[in-house]
Image (cartoon, rainbow, N blue to C red; front, side):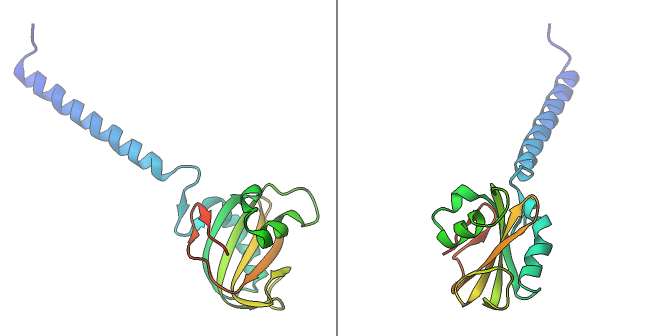
Length: 152
């Protein structure tokens, strides 16, 4: 026996509302994943920003920050050495915080890389916010922020 027509239409509307709510919740869940970021700073790297800013003496413009595993930096020798040769316990993850401006090895803390350049990449241990070094580069990367670091 079929339910009355009014009841069928209410059930259909309820089903559509439930389906729409599930779609909305599923869509929003993708926006709040563990690697999400606001703007150009990875969420976990917000704690590294004070140490990074102090390393460049509060100069330059923040370009972005990435939380990366140290092993993924092997193709970036200067940054990899900065992360792996720091004294203390072995570092597994770092926040790379990039600043644009005019930098020299004398105007940044724990300098590495070029004597002067337009980019300073501050390498900060995650999650302890320990400054490992500041790599001065002569040219800005093509892209920086979110889930990768295109540093050269």
